[in-house]
Image 1 (cartoon, helix red, strand yellow):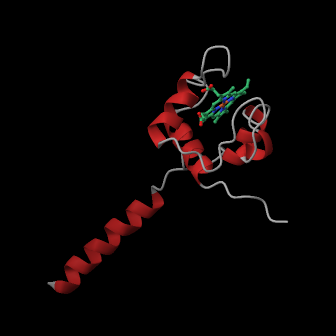
Image 2: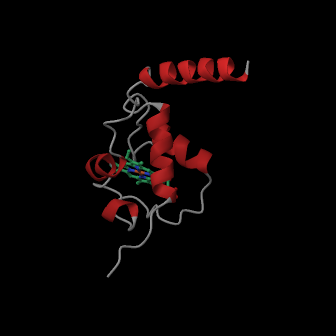
Length: 104
Ligand code: HEC
């Protein structure tokens, strides 16, 4: 009996593997997108202030950052709701959180 259920398990696993979908955000390179879209105002990939504030080591919480990216700020920063999916905006929040000074 144990042998039978093990082979059923193998069959199920093989099926699951062959059905692996292409990741939805495979082409979303957050660092490049940031440099191209945000870098005009957030200098050095967000490490330094420009027209906008430095984002590295932001004291703001994730929700604040997420909603700033979505809604922008009138007269200061464009809104990106619609330009990016929620998943992509989450990736940007993670990118901002992971920012470190450049070496050298
Ligand atoms: C046209 C210039 C401009 C562009 C482009 C821009 N920003 Fe901003 N951003 C600003 C300014 C100015 C502020 C400060 C707004 C304020 O006074 O609260 C800001 C604030 C922010 C904040 C909040 C920081 C804080 O501590 O208050 C985040 C996060 C942010 N921007 C992320 C982004 C991201 C991500 C992009 C690209 C998708 C982007 N910005 C594109 C100008 C810009």
